Each structure stands twice: as C-alpha cells, then as structure tokens.
Length: 118
Image 1: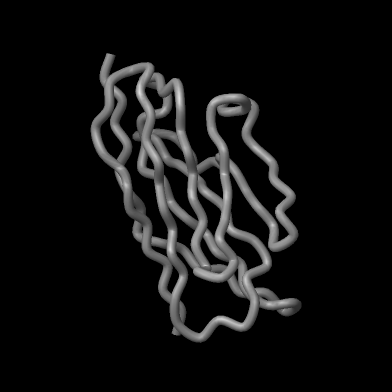
Image 2: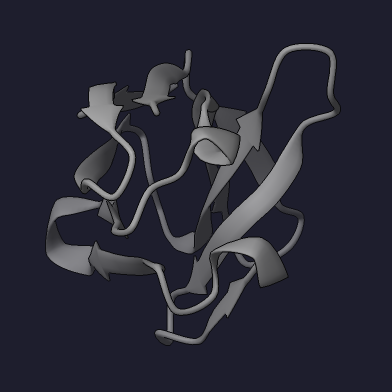
C-alpha cells in the first residue's frame, strides 16, 4: 500500500506565498516522478509542475517563474513553493507520485485547497 499526503494549503492574499508538501509512504521501491496538479471549480485537472527522480522539472506556462518544485528523495517528499499568487491560482492542489521502473503505478493524494483572495 502506498499513501500520498499533501499539506500546506490555505488562504492567502494575492501576491503572497505558500509552500505545499507531499509525502509518499508505504511500500515504495522507487519514485520515478512526483508532480503537482490542480483543479479549479468547473475546470479540468491540469499539471502544474513535475520533477523526476533525476531532478528534471517542467512547469505549466501559467506558473513559470512563480512556482518551484523540489524533492527530497531520502524523505520521499516533494514540495511546491508558490510565490506571487493570484486569484487564478485558486484550486485544489493534488500530488501525484509515479512509482516503479516499469511497469509504473500512479498514486494520488486527497488534495489540499489553496485559496487566493484579491
């Protein structure tokens, strides 16, 4: 069994910052990648940022230069530092961990709410 747990969401004013954490636990052989997705009301879930086991990252265009993803491989934890937040960043943020070396398994957290007020 693998568990993925997010934390760090909350209410912040526009222009502020938040840091999300995502911890994977359980029977884990190798984490191939960890990623943050978000889903705003009435919209589809979208990729925000991803980081591979080797440290390669990619970001949605809408967050480039404002958000930074990082990970601590020893702790099976990923972080999302979010700066210069705006109201369009309001969403439920989900962490996804892809495990294995092939075949891969995908594991989701329960989500954490981020609300940015104007």
